[in-house]
Amino acid sequence: MIKGNFPIEKFETLQTPFYYYDTALLRQTLDIVKHESEQYNYDVHYALKANVNSDLLRIIASYGLGADCVSGNEIQAAIEAGFPAEKVVFAGVGKTDREINRALDFDIFCFNAESEQELQVINMLATKKGKKARVALRINPNVDAHTHHYITTGLNENKFGFNIENLDKVIAVIPSLTNLEFIGLHFHIGSQITDLSSFQDLCVRVNELQDDLEEKGIVLKHINIGGGLGINYEHPNHFPIADFETYFRLFHKNLRLREGQQLHCEPGRSIVAQCGSLITRVTYIKKGISKQFAIVDAGMTDLIRPALYEAHHRIENISSNEPVEFYDVVGPICESSDVFQKHCELNGSRRGDFLALRSAGAYGEIMASRYNLRELPKAYLSEKLIVNG
View 1: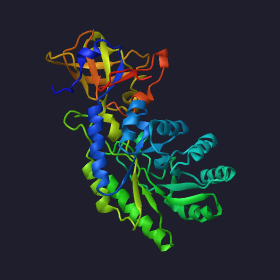
View 2: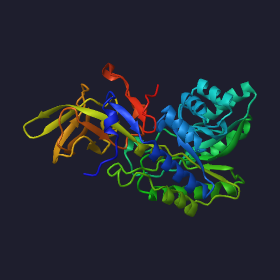
View 3: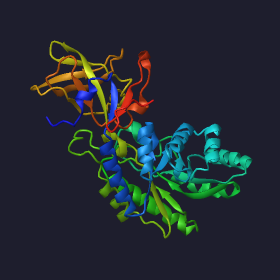
View 4: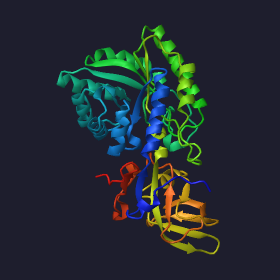
């Protein structure tokens, strides 16, 4: 069984469970993102919702990326980590007045607005501050991302954004909102997209929409195609970096940008997922009638994706080279859903072995909770192995 490379001797001194981030892989990923996007002069905004570990944010910001935020606290974290305000976009269907005011005070690049009432509120708050807020309209292109229904966001029946049918009405209202500057359109069709034909479908819809707007005399400065590029959860050792080359080339080939128009994108998972692993130790091996359990000290409080989405994470016993056996890998939480993987193929395991749940750098640490009054997992970087916070 091919496994990742982990400094087990250093893990022996650390309390599990914890997150371990391979910062060399993160930097290699960022090098590729920067190289591929700069070929087409595309602006990349890292989606903070994937992971807001402060050390990781500072590394990502140092590569010149912008930030995609969905809360006021994410905006604060982005600014503190070194992302320039002029590269921060603020999305989210339920922005509060307090969050909008914070974004206005920072003079962020753009609000990705999702309803007519939100536009009115942003205008009202900007007027009170004597400012002009730049806004893009988030449009539902009704493109199926062919992914889990919890993370599909671009269909008409989602809570997010404007339906195309209502766009003319909304655009007609904007001139009366004198403290808004309408600068672009925003799209986001879903997450963990591995069928890139979904992005081709998005390009078709954006092209059609731009043609329609141009007939009405409207040409916008910015097009934001959101994020969603997936990663390979099954084979993180063979495919440690997402296919950014094909991703960026697809938009260059299929999207008809107008002269002077700037394209923006918002990857999150594809930047940080593969560099992170949740490290846990086997607490007990329990043999049943027809199966055996590896009971570990990590649970759904540390990594909720398998319980929430039935998501798959490759699990490796990084302490053992024994012959492969099959286990149900489960956590200690008092919930039947606290299962990381059933019938999991692992090298023969025993109490005290380290297991690595791979591809956990996105939607792992950030979604941890204190249910059952458990402690939040700490995080360590390969280049420092120092506890964060």
